[in-house]
Image (cartoon, rainbow, N blue to C red; front, side):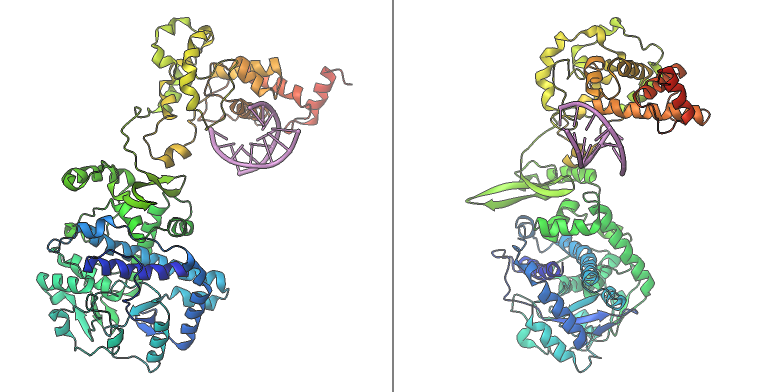
Length: 613
DNA sequence: CTTAGGG
DNA sequence: CCCTAAG
């Protein structure tokens, strides 16, 4: 966990660095590194330099998690960042990055850290310590310049021995400090000039004292933005700019949109509660998205990062469909809500048209597509969600292959209400088109029943020819309306997550079905579900033997229940005729003389009737 | 695969 | 309905 965070810290640097320098040749350069300083965010928002003790803890954590780094480092996706970079306009993807890191790093770092502590140390003290969140801030003076205790030097150098620990959104490009910023603070010489990065990589700037973004013009804000993130912007929304900049400066995404002033390392204008609330909201949003794919949030992070080695950029680009609304100044008041997946598809289609010139891949979700060099050649892949995991698959362009699913629930209702009365086999409905019929006739006597869920779709086609041999007289009305249900099996078009996980459609049992079931039970005996299925339910392709068994269980329960409880009928379900219930009771008691619900009196009667006494 | 039973 | 264990 912790190792990951470390990785990302570095990745972040790299990505920014590469973006700025326009060189994406290598992904793991560690030559240029920013010096980090370990601080702790106290309850009131102040940044407290780490003590020796804390340093040791962190070091300990790092050392104990070093093995995590042995994973192959996530490789930065090449396509988007550089190509689209246009200094004058500020490419969406680049801001996307920033957005990414805000969200991901913030939440993950906190989570990772607390989780780590949680697992490693049991004591409350440690947990508290953890939730205070250790931040490694770049060695910029702006946040601690005035009140660094004496041990800071030591702390600092100690940190420098190891890799930069945590992320820092301003860690890379603070040196182009603008006049605006310098005007408000007294410039100081960098202490560790040698540690400052190379020319291409900005030094860290220091802004002592107060940073009040409110007084800045839009132009100044844009400059500040550029200085902070190293990215140009043409955004003219003051609030948006201020928020971004502040985020960058205080290394957090939890900046309220209200007036903000940074004064002596303290946030002025937003109390901690507000920030906390905001932070929680941020986390929740992350999870809300993540949980679409994974049941639990800790897993999802791990899954995305560990198992698949994707960078945060990748992950987020997918969600954002690589195209954040960058005119986004207008909606800066609210935090950007990640679009739903469907929305992504739709919007990215339109994006595709806009940038059709550079898009050779007809993609629904272009952002998730990337070129991956595999072996000798380059393979174009796309992200696919499968059963809660994200995998990369070779890109295949596919259009719609089957019509959309119909609303079967409505049909189910239709069954139980309308057709109940005239449920007798009816030969007059054979005039329905074969296409309507063959949907459900995927199973005939003599053909092995398909296991549930699996390979259902495979037997569809080659069973169709057999359709003509089916005794159509056996068909029940239910059979004929199910035009919609088979299309749901070969619906390749929907996201795999849904089609793979989707439950079988609920179909209310009709009285005729129940009658058939009871009849089958009486004929073949309780427990002979496959026989009943095969011999009495062959036309009902949607009822498996397991379904029969389940239904029988329910019937039995209901029959014994409404006898004792005085007819407690479930409101939602249809009323089962009493004569059927009677049959059920009889059959049930026949198979198990001692019914779990029935009393001894019943057993006695049963025995006497069976001549046991 | 079929059954049985819990979820 | 789903899932699993047990034959």
